[in-house]
Image (cartoon, rainbow, N blue to C red; front, side, top):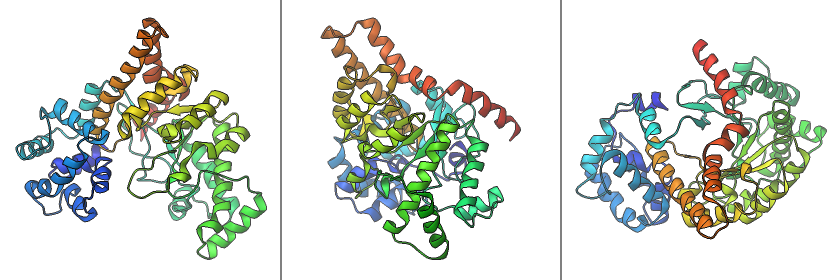
Length: 405
């Protein structure tokens, strides 16, 4: 957030490793404690100390998409070709010297990004700090994890002392924010399976009563989580609000990939035909399965958010397949998915490069005309998102409320 950047103390190159690239370096053997010192501005380590701790693991991970993304960013934005003994001090000085309140807009303009969809967690469900020239927000699923009930009680004025009153709280958030939100974002693949069973209401009510009285094990609380997700999908249909699901690769080190297959949600796609499902991260490594699902279900869309940096060649191959398998209006070709704007820039460069290569190959093979390839790029990188998330309508409501908040 621009406000977070403005309030930050002295910044250095370690800021560029707070997201994604750090995972590859840890996978390459870097101690987690050392990475924590590198990315923390106030760790007490000098720029030189940070670099010497990072250097051997950066060299081992230099080949990955995460690290290429950072090199593109520092090359184009800061005029520095790579992280090295000779560059990290100067790079850190340039990072610290940026005009922090306007920096996000500056980098967005360079990346050709008009507005970004964002989900935050500073407040329950919906971020309140509005930036109409930069962001639109998603609602966040703070419902099914049941972790923010005290805050929801305070905000809604509801007692939330029964499942009935909790469902009323969910209604309150949808009524208040769904008309300006772009989607509901559900990220449960990090801590549980994406199979959400169809649970009878009396069973869910009984689990909620127990939840209020005593700690429950994961398998005991899961039926309640399932019931809540189904309820939220009904609300999404009621409010014409798409739902974004994290699927496939999880960020971090040491997650259970089997939890995250989009195919686990087939029962949801069937039960809620009026709810539009935007499936994040191409469900990699289960992408062929997602391609088949998207071909068959009118309400399922493929999103390449994050995909162009975690495995660029795979994303390129799968896009080539999808372009001859899935209707073009169902492919969202790019999402920055970074918590710092330089990463979004680098990712956008890789995405355009890879998409252009795929489309050029289709033209050279005689499969697409140049005219269609241009239209396909325009759809995947702009028009599909405008259409499928009703961006212009959302921007009007969002801007009006930003003026009064």
